[in-house]
Length: 145
Image (cartoon, rainbow, N blue to C red):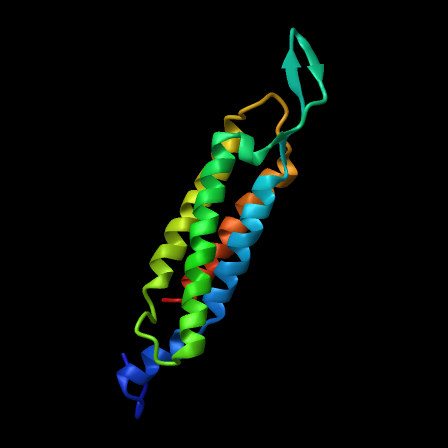
């Protein structure tokens, strides 16, 4: 519903600022960076724990987060550049759906990586970091609606 004296189309364009795109872009990039960090600290070999660090890109969880985060980053970057070139870019509100989808995947996979560890000793710092980057991507998506 439009405010009094303001056309509905002007109100719709006013609500869709590039802040949500920027937040989703940065948070997706940080999610990819966290996926490259140490995900699991120790590995069991022959019944003994050895200090072998498993990076996120060596796990199925990390690969999913890297793929989704990279897709979200590339899409958000393209939308920001398109809005920079043409202020009345046709894709005004739809990026929110992609950002929210990417955020839900990052959040769910981060929780799965914490609850069902790929290795014995999860590094909760990187996993919780991924979880919160998913929340920030979701917040950026919410700003698009």
